[in-house]
Length: 203
Image (cartoon, rainbow, N blue to C red; front, side, top):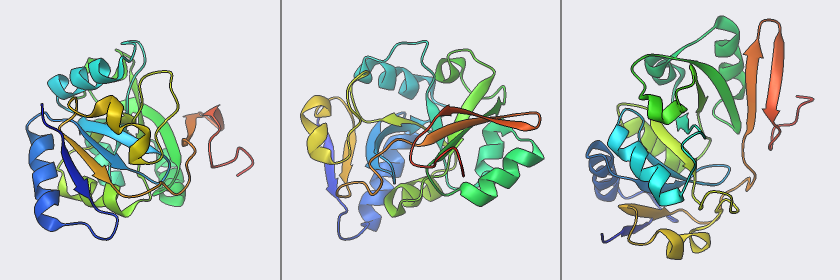
């Protein structure tokens, strides 16, 4: 496989953006920057694409993959949301917050490791949002690194690892936050913090 490389440090090129969307629609795998770290992504409804990500990253099958998109409306395509969850999303998204929510049956079980839940997030990054807005479904997205290694915050961190294994790599320069997102789950009247990232528990 020849990995296409796009440089969007200065601007997002419309023609290349459409090429990326076409790749994703054809079960392809793409690496792009988010506000936290670089993500490796595919269509969240594509079992073929998700299987590729597990293989490329050498990721254990029991570790579910989260989902990125650009709006609460698109999250509702793949998840059943509580009002409290929607309220938190409206306050903290786009941003470095991932929420574990009840998934819909349409999501492939390989994505969620057969769990009834899925992690969802809206990233605060121009390149990521351009891709997510132009794609009709949320994207299965995990950090761009081999499982167990440090997450990539610029393309030099992972190009050698993934060149020839993914369909495209988009260079948007170093990511802004460079720390993984905070992960929470709403449980009745409590908010359970599963991983503290750049958004602190006190918030």
